[in-house]
Each structure stands twice: as structure tokens, then as C-alpha cells.
Length: 549
Image 1: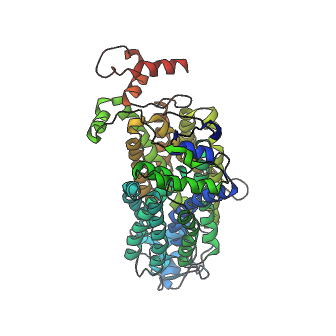
Image 2 (image 1 turned 180 degrees about the vertical axis):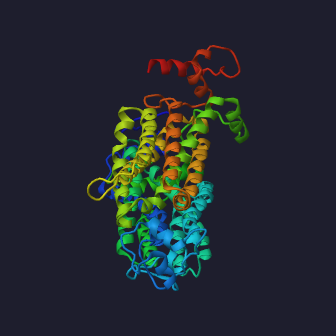
Image 3 (image 1 turned 90 degrees about the horizontal axis):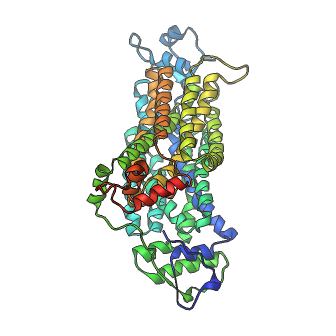
């Protein structure tokens, strides 16, 4: 894509610029007000993260905190007070096995949580009904799948209205959840929450980047992901100090207020007005707002806004889909990447619901440690991505995570407070987070311009399938085997890491524009052949570029 560097002194009376070029001028040195708006929009990710982790704390099942109230219970555990047992042992006592019936809350035992309230305790979602607790997480990700289809909405009606409607629905939906009379009602509106979250998250991301100058996009992108980790850190702390699941919902609604206010005060993006609405006057109004916010004296009356040209010929939707059959290298790369996204989604969200199972101490602290580690991972992952390259870095993240899950099988405890299992899982989850943060840039760089949207969509679908399945990992631990679950994690992560090696490096390589270029870069020796598959004139250029690098 053409890039033109201009400053105000170079402009004539009839200069023609794109909205991006104007933004690069007026926001080249962002004011503190501009940074405040960016940070306000980024903070939406804290809302998204806090809401995603909500079921882990709002629905926590305290299998280690209960007392017997019947002879049946006392005979089973030989004591009237539970102390020093693990969550697995507590669940085994309460739920029994094929030869013993589950103990009944209010009859055989009472929760001993010091006035704490979770929806799992209120609606008796333990033992055979525990799957409804994990479903409260999965159903939100089902909503994400549906909400991801809302991209056409903010393409038609605007980024601002897509973001605003999503934020308002999230705010109102949480207060509806406060009055949930049953778990069925709660699950239905968690699905609505998932749809609204994905719609708002995508719209805010596009809205923010379309107001961001080119040289600041990397920082803004990193900040956007970092705020996800901030929301993760808030979640266990809030879960520990806020003793009611209903007040945790109120907290999540409060977190959405700041990004909502930022969206309200901003006009829709100039790019949307110019490209989608074909209205130059409205686009200039948005740029004028940005100019005032940054205290720039750029004269918009001296320029005519134009759309950026495209370097890829227009193709029909069916033709672009058939390319995945015609160009097998692109299809194979997409298949590998979608599997990598599925695995990282499964592992990431699997740990959201299983950290309590790996903790022998405080349930909330067990989540706080990986939350802090995730924040560190998002900051540090940029170093190997920049200096070691994408392929080796992403592959290493998966393989190190896999190795950590294998080491977690060692039944040894360090002197002090942490076991090999806990430490290894903490390291593994940190590298899973780093992999999740890295696959976005790797996939975007490997995908050709002509098919980038479709490939990102396919990979995003893979991650959402993993996110739906991830919360069920706690059931695998409780009803199948913890070592077996760790082996499953290790095999999936290791396979994703090995498959990643099959992908080409993207650092320092120009992003491909067409599917033909991907095919040529894999089979450059056939570039000179006059066959249908390699006849594109850009093939040889792509191969020469690779050789030069």
C-alpha cells in the first residue's frame, strides 16, 4: 500500500490526502488528552477480561469449606469439621462415587464460607450439577461466536454506534443478571453478554486504530492487550474482597462506564465517513475534532480527502473461497494456524476454570499469580518477536508450555508454599498467554492482503471453539484425571508448536498481496514455469525478495 510522508509545509492549495495521512500529521505528537482517550478506550479490555473471568469467582464452588450436619456425613468423613483437605478430596466426600450417594446441602452439610455468596451455592451447582457452572463460562463464548458476525453492523451504521450499543447492552445486561431467578435465566443472558461483548470489543478496536497515527499503532495495540491482563488481575482481587456474586456484576458494569464515555465524546472515525458513507464533510469534522484535541493548527480547508487505492484486483466472494482449493499452500497454512488458535484458546480458557484445582492454598491467590504473570508476558513477548523472529518465537512459546505441563506431573513440593505442579502450571500458563498474544501478529503477516479478513476470521473461529471447550477442562480434572488432563494439555501444545515450524518466517519479509505469492514463496523453484498455478508475474519478484532477505 502506498505510503506518503508529508508535513504541512509541503502542502499546496489543492493537495489531496487520505484520512490516514492527515491523522499522521495532526496526531504525530499526541497530546495528553489524546492519550487519555486512547487509555479510556483500551480500558474496555479490562471490562471484557473481568467479565470473562466472572464465573470463576461469582460461581466458585467451595469444595474445601463446609461442615457436616448429619450422621451420614460424619460417618463418611469421620469428623465434623473439614480442615486441611484439597478441593479434590472435598468434592469426593460431598459427591460420593458409584457406591455412595451425594450429600445434600442443608441436610447433610452446610457451606462454611463466612457469609460469602456465589451463584453456584445459591442454585446448588455442585456435584452432578457442576457442569452448569462451567457452562456459565462456555455459554458466553457461544455468544462471542454469534457476536463476531456483527462486523457488518458497524461497517454499515458506524464504529461509534456499534461500540456504543455493545457497551450499553453490557451495562444493562449485568443488572438484568442481578435479578436472575434461576440458572437457566442466568445462562440465557450470559449468552447475550457474550454477543454484546464481542460486538463492542471489535468495534472499539477498529474505532481506536482508525484514530491512531501509523507510528503509534504498535504501542496502542500492546496497551489494548495489556488492559486485558489488568482486568484479569482485578478479577481475583475483587473476588476475594467482594463477598457477593451480585456485587461482582455491579463492578463489571462500573468498569464499562469509562470506555462508554470515551465513545460518546468522540465523533465516528473519518475513515468510516469517507470510505463507507462517502461524506467528505463529516470526515473533515472528525479530523477537526482530532486536530483540536491535539492542539494542532493544520488547515483542513487546504486539502481534499481521498480514499486509499488498492493493490489487489477485486474478486468475488466465491472466487476467493475457491482459492483455498487452487492454492494448497495457503489452505495448509490457514489450517495449521487455525489449529494453533484453537489450542491456545482451549488452554488459555481451560486454565481460567482450573487454577483452583491446582492450588492447595487460597483459591483467589491461585488466580492472582498467573494474572500477574500474564501481564509480564504481554510486556516481554515483544522482545523475542522483534529480534528472534515470529516462527521460532511462537513455536517456542507452545513447546515451553508443553514441557511445563509434563513437568507438572512430578509429585514433589518445594520447601515452602508451592509445589512443582503449581510452579510448572504457572510457567505453562504464562507461555500460553504469550502465544495467544503472538499469534495475532503472526497470522496477520502471513495472510495475503486478498484473503486476510477471511483467514483471520477462520482463525478467530478456531480460538472461540477452543474457548467454548476450555472451561470444561475442570470437569476432566474432577471426573477423569488431573494427570490425564495435564498430558492432554502437553500433547496439544507440543503439536501446535511443532506444526508452527512448518510455517514460513514473516519478520523482515513483505506481506504477500495474493495467494499466488504464498504458493511461489513455498515453491520458488517452479516460479519460471508457465503453468496456471505459478503464472502470476509477482511470483518471481516474491522469490527474489526472499532470496535477498
